[in-house]
Length: 149
Picture 1: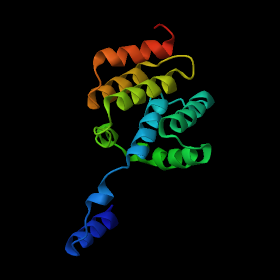
Picture 2: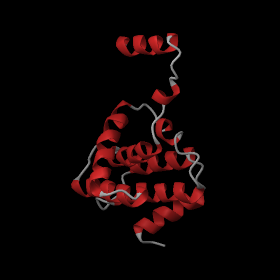
Picture 3: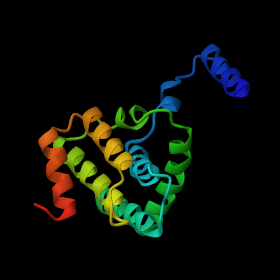
């Protein structure tokens, strides 16, 4: 930690722009949110891993290898994160339909193992609130994933 603070002060003294070091790219933020919901119940099984990979490919139009790399970059960020805001703040400029698709993808990851844990539900609910997704869209996407629409 001391080294990172020293590095930051050195950059400030040298007049370097720190903003590029602060944020997370939108793609990593999306991957991180999928990882966050998969790990919310502290049980990540193979069906959730596959769902994350396939959903990243679909959402971001990536091939399998690109999606794997993105997940590998996102997983440590989730471990270091203290708040969903770390990721959602990078995604507020997305269009409403894209944000709704992300919430739906989060439901799909949560339900990949056949059940939605209350903690997974809570993570998705908080993400939807932080992304300003209407509650009705939050519910519609959940029901759609559960096959009840």
